[in-house]
Image (tube, rainbow, N blue to C red; front, side, top):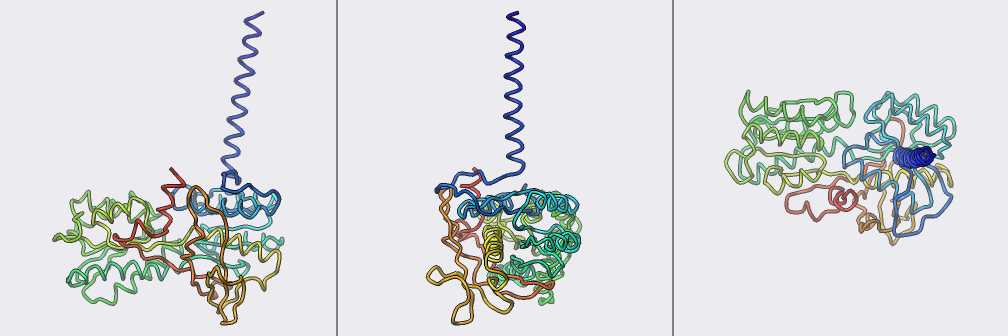
Length: 400
């Protein structure tokens, strides 16, 4: 009898443990806004759906955390679902969000064309959508928030060229231009931006590689094979952090990773400065990085969703204006023709992301039939990579 009772107690304990585990997994899967901030959470508010491109890289993990903190500061909640760079998964996730009754959606489309029909259907139901980091070909997007990928491609190539010229060398030789999938609009625009700069120098021979899924391993293999075939190139322009890290690891594997200042250095310009890239900068292996103010992407998106719901489309800055971020001015149109937006929130885990609005000034232009807030990129150099308020410096506090 005691044995049977003991068994029942053991089963009850196991069931309780399983229940707690399952609830933890469910809560973690939906990633509701449960993080603690330095201010008591306000109840009520809006429910947003957030569909980032993925949630595996630190780049997107801190973006999602910034989104959660901003929502928390303003009394709202966010459902974050990870499509893992898959169009069909993202469509499923968006439909799920609608079924959960979200008031608006912020998203990084996994395809410029593959999401258009779903976005149109959702907007027609009265749910506004703001896109960030990437975009979708439909006029029904309320506003898009991202850097000009063409511009950051240009800046990465220009920074690499500047390093060459600063060292008194002639820009002559092969430059490996490594970007992402041929269906990814960011990959295409960054490639084209970098290519437009490289083609200005007759002595440079660009060799373009489009790496499916921004694969770090494939980028490394590509560089190893290129060095084996032609010897070390003059330079490398890598259009995101994955292929950038892979490219430098490829130079290391090919015994071609020589620090700047020594003969044979391969000049490298990259887009996105993750922590490993900062280490490469300190080692003299990366000469310049172009970073995005992506922590502000979901916060600006939520700001626009709330403004639109409460005040209508006139509260969204129109095409043709430049948006500033001045804490001494009220939000909205200014006497000088600009438009001011200063985001406000609390300090979280020792980080005040609102103190440095590096995203502005930002022009609003028309693209794909809707507004595009073209936020400002940041040039990161070895001498300032630890000081700038870039996302990789936030990672160490938020993801430790």
